[in-house]
Image (cartoon, rainbow, N blue to C red):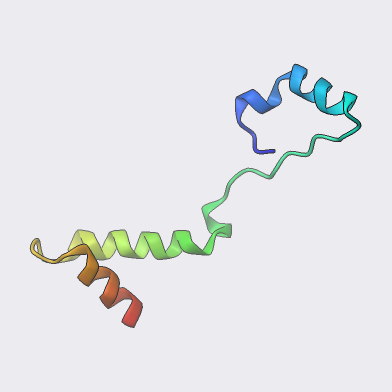
Length: 66
């Protein structure tokens, strides 16, 4: 499970244990471990510095062809 506050409730842990299962939590989210975050960051930066009349499609096309 992720670390959402609802998942840390003792009632959920108890229900899972009663069903014969074990609760395992995922590690904290890290953008450094998710490759697409680097692409999103680069696209946002390209959009910020693009001419005002440049479409998002053109920005993405340019990024993908580079």
